[in-house]
Length: 460
Ligand code: HAM
Image (cartoon, rainbow, N blue to C red):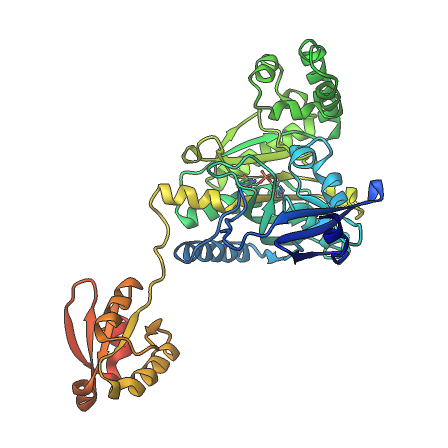
């Protein structure tokens, strides 16, 4: 095996005597490793754990939802940004924070062949801000609105609504410190959900104040949790000390029990943050947005300041957050730009689709308008010409190219859920008509070819 491995190419995979070998390097140890696996020609592959194929019957709902998001975003003047699938690992460490779950447990990180540290993006905000700084999209004093539709990658324990590759739509409003900007982001979020049929949305809203407020709150958490932490392993203590706020995200019942009695972060707000928070609630009330003040929401990413919010849905089970967002006034500077305030939101696409399905809302699949059936060989050319003309007129038309019998063509039309079968044979050719059959009812009638597109559109 060693000898076979030795003959392999330095990089990539190559098949040898029933084995596949892949070289990879561990630069820290100056070592290279050859991983061999048995080549099994009968092996059937599956999508990796925590990922999902979006199948043809489902993609119509995705396309519709993304279209509704883009339409909504453009009403508020957001322009779409598309950033790479991977970025420098350091971008996420610096933005989300070393102690966040994302950085400490969930990133898909690797070294590329040039020994760069790379991470598949676990969220869309840091890449958008990296691009904003790199391309100077928001010069000092201006306001920039960015939207995105993106996959994200997080190594999580998969369950309903929690995937390792999932998708988000998001909005980022950069350059305005005003509570009006927070209100716009939150209102646009709610309008998006209303637009796709998820109404009665309630926003869970909190303020985590400025740096001073969080510093005081952190000290209060450590004091309150001192007894509990002293009995914990050193790494738990160390993590808590680095960022006590993370204790608040813990699902551990013992941590939750120990947290009981801790005063909420809102008790530590500076007076101007309190004012700002009140203003925001008033603006949202005026906009008809239902809000619940939720002092327990602090969010799991380090970049937030002042406003934080989530929208939950009881239809999602334990993964109840449909979306999350907030203000992040320090991030642009943290990533190398000039001090610039910003606020944003990201909404999970899979989670919105789960809720819609549960509500039996959203569009059905986009089925073909008609299947043209070649009833006799003489009609073939006419049928192909007709298909071209009807597609040019904007109708979705299918037909058979493999000389199947009329019966099999009709079966295909059924399988494809076409609305109509359009049959043309010798009789129809002679009369200049088509026989149009409504597949749901099997009713049929003759229609002159010239009027066909109107009938298929359901206009006559
Ligand atoms: P986040 O709360 O980590 O925030 O994610 C936002 C939303 O993405 C979640 O509420 C959920 O709907 C969806 N999501 C996240 N992880 C998964 C997963 N593993 N499986 C399925 N859906 C998931 C952010 O990502 C911030 N960048 C939001 C933001 C934008 N803050 C300011 N601007």
